[in-house]
Image (cartoon, rainbow, N blue to C red):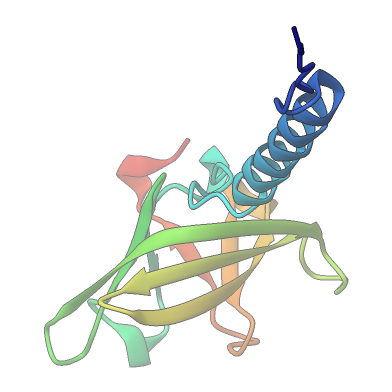
Length: 145
């Protein structure tokens, strides 16, 4: 009687664990990367929330509104431009006349807009846009925090 001994052709257990661990590490890395690219913006601070107006005659009757998930502004044509906030950043002011700099990154129908505000806590709070050195915007009196 001739008995043949056949080798087991299954994949060794150690090799299977290695593939599984590599796959698990790849999935974990992917989750970390996509988590860093989250579309949820950082919270806009309460001092910025509300409807803002200016006494500058060039912007009479116009407003700039900020809420936790969006910002909007009225135009001289009578339109209101609404943007979803996709990213928010804050940094300490680099200029003497402001307390902090806030950057709102907005998106609307594939169009992107970045608004940089120089905020001062003076007199209940006011801000100016980065490109408007002398025009201050204050919150409507009925919306003061």
